Length: 186
Image (cartoon, rainbow, N blue to C red; front, side, top):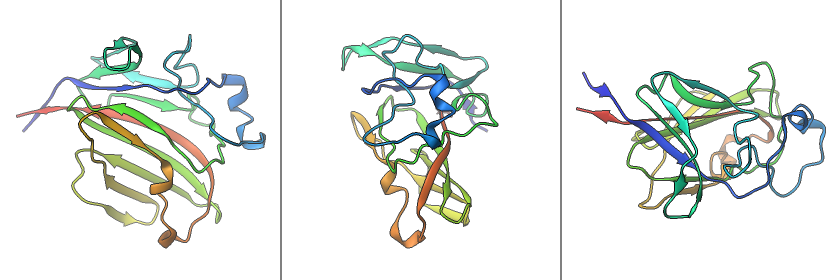
């Protein structure tokens, strides 16, 4: 059995922050360009996020490499330490843009993120990418897990690679976004 210890990751973004009151109208709002849901430099970067932090902490340290504040979550269990958006589980993001841009620093720890989308057939689909996943798995048409390769400096990724033309799916909107991380020690 492996012990889970020192769970952690850092996220930095460079777009403007969207307030909680606007979150409720994303699906009825004209959307173009980028729409930020997490801005680590803002005064309240987790305003529209819920966090589950057990035996863990959330900090905003200054990252030495980018000389900027980042969001850092450190904990011991992937199931009990995460951030999720929107904060209200009954709400949805309603984002119609086909992009998810992530800037994540590689701390040599396990990291996973998942998004839930609604397609043109009104089907909810969940995509999960992890740096500890070794192969793609799509046991159910509604849930897909994929490996995420963390490069030396980190990752910069886009949602467009998650949805392939083979899926014959048109993204209608994002519903939820969740980040988790962990490190195992033998």
